[in-house]
Amino acid sequence: MSLRRQRNALYEGMYIISATLSDESRKKAFEKITDGISSNGGKVLKVHEQGRRKLAYTIDGKREGYYYLVYFEAPTQTIAELWKDYPLHEDLIRFMTLRTEKVLETLEFAPLNAQ
Image (cartoon, rainbow, N blue to C red):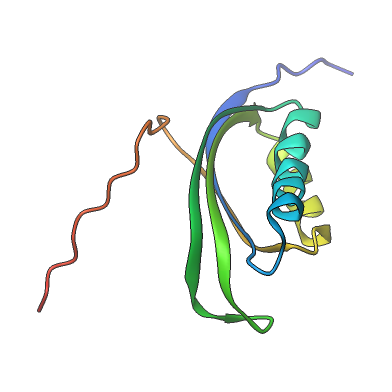
């Protein structure tokens, strides 16, 4: 059995947590996500809390959610483990994880052109 070198990659994760939670419960739900990253060998580098926003469409009867954008480093095999755990988080409405090249220190959005 050969030892394979663990390769870390930089990821950007978007998480939407139920807006019906109290501040304390929402904080615990988000900590469950970041603890999952850490316990699987990852390291959270930056968190952008986007606040409460309207969803593009209703998901499981919910019209709003709290958005978080998280930059983290993790071994490549960690993502599969995280994705197995995420559906078990009852307060996590949606999630998405992408590889990225750099951590954005600030988020800026270009204005939509009126047509």
